[in-house]
Image (cartoon, rainbow, N blue to C red; front, top):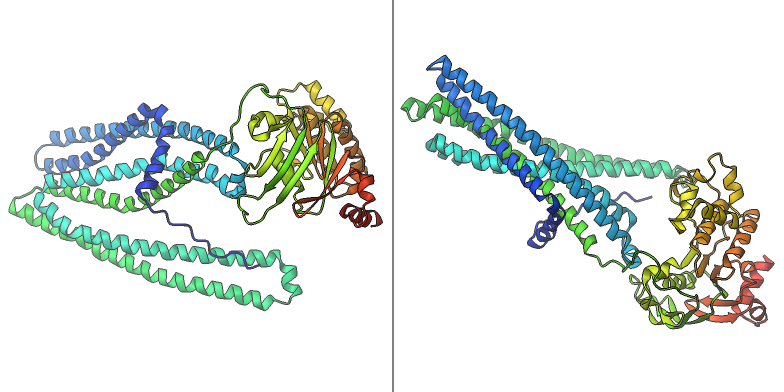
Length: 590
């Protein structure tokens, strides 16, 4: 209810380290280096063409006193100059766009590939939205920077430096006079402009906060009315909108000051330059054409200086975005291998005195001295209350986390000695909350074996009790499941997941509460499919509902990260004061 607090963006400060890290982005431009350098050449030529323009205008003004032929000649030169500038600008933009799009595609691919190969410890410490922002927002920011911003920034720098030099050649006296006035005005304008942007940003943040209050209140209107808090919410919104008024008025006064300063300072300075230039013309130290060229160059330089501040701010943001992307690329990925399996597992599993805590919760030991021995092809159940450590055991088995103490062996071999890709390719998991990708049913089943034929896919669906309902859809296996499988019921999604696992043909199967969220009819169909899936495979079944694990070869009862009981359903049911017996009685009596 009281969300919407002001979240200020961290101000990006350029340092030697951040700049060095950001410059590594150019490794992705290397394949297109010659094209990029050619684009820079066209940029420089285009910038110089802009600087030559005022000189020709000055020549034309002076030629007005001589002959018409000279005026026409200069006009032709100007037309040729504009043509060249148009050609230079065209090729500069085309080359920069080509380089930018190609190198950003490579950067997107490299970032995404590195991202999906990072260990689960990395994802446990970051939000999905933040990571998605790296690929979406940050790279889009780089796109704008490399296509437009960096080129414009360099162009304005060339105009400022080149224009200043040309001012000196045009009239050293007038240039010295101008440089004694304009820098002071520009500095004051930049300072006021920065404060004005800060006020504007503050107003926008307060407006966003006020909108959040409206959104939250309307979403929770039933709570507002239930607690009779209409007056409280009105006062909260009133306070926020009054804050907007205060900052907006301050910003308005500053804006008025800025406008007055521009009128007085800039136009006054231009008038002073014209006055001093007129004196120089009267003294014979410069011509009218030189004064015209000088004034046009001054306007060009002033406009360039005015835009440099904003362009620099955008480049700062791009450097910050690049630094964050480099942080992802600097992360150490998991070691994956391509091609056929090099190590085939049989399916026996053993935990010896295993202890574990999550990397971001070092003070909480999730598993304590776990000892498990599961034979090849055995069906084992892990039961216990939420938070007992059941799912953590399966995550360690998948090598999502590796910072455990003690031993975890498969077929008598330490799990860290097995090729990671080979291990995961031979383990399948059917969770409670099934995530289907937004493609077709066929594509989702084939996710377990991308190269599978249509016959293999259909056979897996038949074994999973899914073929019948799939066939009823007009597009059968080509039916789109929608975002996260929203077009299908829970039971249908579960059976697709089972078909996916069947197609994978794993040696070890993990069932994590696979039927707990289903109705009776769906549960029966899914349970039949699971029974077929478990045949001949080492199976770990995690369950709260003990009715689903009665047939297990062995049951381990976990409590607060420790195994407190183990045995068959009959053995555990006969333990007086046993945890399993208590859980069983509570469920079956209920």
